[in-house]
Every structure is written in structure tokens, then in C-alpha cells.
Length: 96
Picture 1 (cartoon, rainbow, N blue to C red):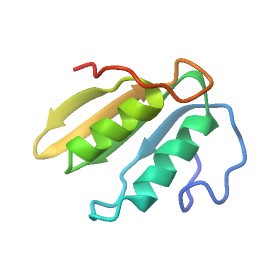
Picture 2 (picture 1 turned 120 degrees about the vertical axis):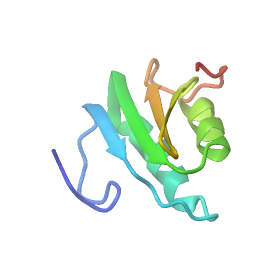
Picture 3 (picture 1 turned 30 degrees about the horizontal axis):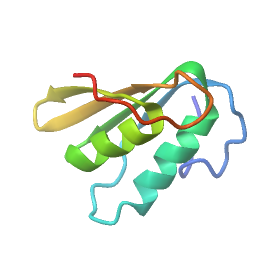
Picture 4 (picture 1 turned 45 degrees about the vertical axis):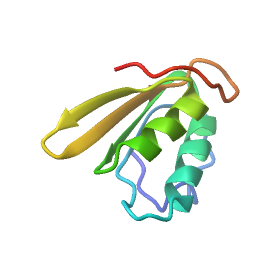
């Protein structure tokens, strides 16, 4: 377990799981960077989980990077699960 501001303190590129609760603001520059850099920090088969109150932007961004995403609804939150299946960004359909 590591704690920090996004990936400033992390140089490792072999994570199996990344958990995030990004800001819910309309400026998506922070979560965009977090998703893209997170993809590069995961090993093949590694998963990124994100908890947000917004659905569409995160769903679309995770699909564009990971190639797919599972979405769970818990109370008023969306929990996203995206698995890294290849070493470079992908564009594929959504899994629900």
C-alpha cells in the first residue's frame, strides 16, 4: 500500500491493483492524468478501481484507455473496474 498525490511518489510499473477516488469536478484534467498514468503503472492483468459520482466521462475514458470497463452501482456511487489486457491503449466496447 502506498499513499501519495497521484503518482508523484511512485515510479514502479508493476502494480496489480490501483484504487482511486478522484475529484468529481467538471475539470477532468486530474482524473485523465490519473487514468492514463495508472494504466502505465499496471502490469498486464492488473486492475484499476475508481469510485465516483459521475458515470459517463469515466466510463468513456476508461474504455478508451483499457478497452473495456465493468460498472457497479453502490448507493449513489459508481464503482469502475478496468483490467489492463495489453501494453498499449485500446479502444473497445463497454462491459456491464
